[in-house]
Length: 240
Image (cartoon, rainbow, N blue to C red; front, top):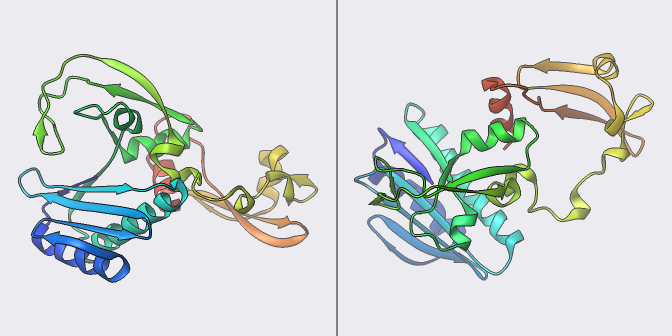
């Protein structure tokens, strides 16, 4: 879900529609929305001109294929923003999966930047502030006036599968024990050893020389933040 400030929504959606129609099978489209599919998975994209939100839904039987489809849509949207609307003010949100499961009328929305920050801290879950007071914020086009409060833990793997790599088959995920830096495995490496094999670094991570099953490789290590660190969050955002 995107909040697109100062973006000509008609032009933005027209460009997005071209990409969706070229890569997916369109079933129905109109001025502000489109329904398309890829195999057994369905996509519903629409924008709200008054509140300036772009909503993206995916539905289907397979979590793996849905994650890939959602990633494809996100890449199309981000490409449009970065290539044609660089000056736009854009906020990104993820609707709470717990609220969707519970069929809450007004689901909680996580800011993507907050989720990326949680990832930099090494957290695997975030708290859904379900039914928090949100009288000044709308969700899905309708103002919210609910005032009851409760909290539930939501796994990052359900909110951002592209960041946690949960959509990938286990055979595609590398075991840390197979990566060696010098004579040490990545799982037990110390900072001094990393520094000795560093090829380069920035505020958004370090690149070190290593081997994977005796094959020379270069690996990027993203920073883990101890406090709110904008550069660490940017590092995770660029990784996504």
